[in-house]
Image (cartoon, rainbow, N blue to C red; front, top):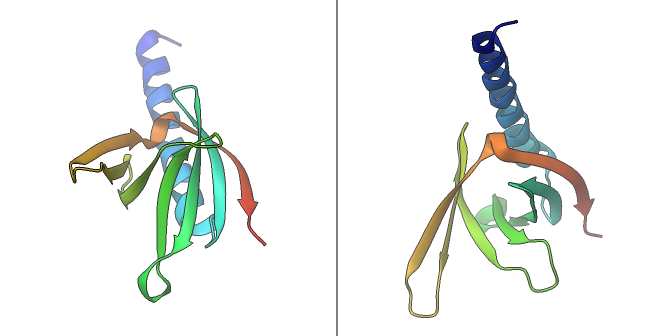
Length: 110
């Protein structure tokens, strides 16, 4: 295999991993549950909770006792778009690339 074929296979693998991660978040992760993930070597938790009229909403937190968190505004085929507001009302946003996420264990609250 030449280098170009290796790159194309790697890109295909990343795209399929991104789709798998999105499906796990949107369809497998239920309300009042969380999924541990690794993103760029750092541990996080994606938490699913009930929003207005029973819709699902998500937030991502650093995996720790007092982990910082951000709300999820949307999930696309490539990114999870995140936002938070500080004490002064300043909005901070971030896009987390789905192809860099390694999904882990799902924990369901009782």
